[in-house]
Length: 454
Image (cartoon, rainbow, N blue to C red):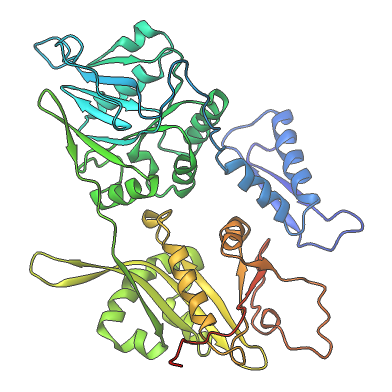
């Protein structure tokens, strides 16, 4: 009855393993209807009473937060090639009519590429993955409204745009900048099975899940880049280039005077791994100390630990940094931090290379950097004699299990009989168990034997 606090205490169901007592507090600034409070509390109680320490409730929250995948779009009547243009964009400049190439007598863009510019129009095919830069906020919003319009008359002229598209083309727009708006837009897009998705790049910063869904989408993708000086997006030029690489953009265009001009795509980063770094290297080598300072915010965010102190607490642990070399204006070469891996080798009788930490900054996700680090560790283990290393092990969180499965890691059986066998590293160095985590392993196979002269 009090307007401030309602408390629910849940206990485990009979017959289940005892779980820590869960306490949930529902707070309100003003008196709320009793039915609403009871509904909230019953939902929380039902989702946690059957869980082991709330693990099922956390899994349910993750499933609700996970964005739905976009289905493969169907075909369009008369369109047999993904290179054939199905939508044309033209800007209407102040003081004149729309610069439509059809009105100027120019020929339609030839089906030689999925995205082509002819005169003042930009044409996109079903296989296009294009980025469009140089738009103001008002122009980007008007373009999204015009593309999403179902009525051809509404889509034909919308603000400063003149659009023409193939009959039956389904277009979904993603313009949200918060989790709830993005989830609603992706749910609506999944329901309509679009042929083309138009997304604003400023809303994708630090959202690897959104990029993963868009990268796996098999239809056309149009990315609207935010202005580099846009303060509201929080997405700088370097972040935008990383997102374009993550989305698999193959062509890039900019709004120029009375038309569109082609821009160069962000270059692929040339990477290298600085590995086998020990504690003294992290503390004394000037170049490595600079990398540690770049990696510390990422380590704080994911592991809530100090990198050097965490390595010190794990005797004989080593670190590998994935970096990209870039030359500054003064000729100095700087190392850009792209990710890290912390590992430890256990000799006989364990014969295991244990992966302790793996992390990549959010702006460099979906570019294969985590896979590069893992394959480097796998190759390192395989080149050791089998008397020293026979397998790799790691403790994976639920959301990362598919990533490690693609690298041929398999779950470690929990019913193995260790009597008379070798010790298991997951028992030696288990540490604090993580809810929902899974121990996985990969056998190294046959011993590495370099080819020699006969």
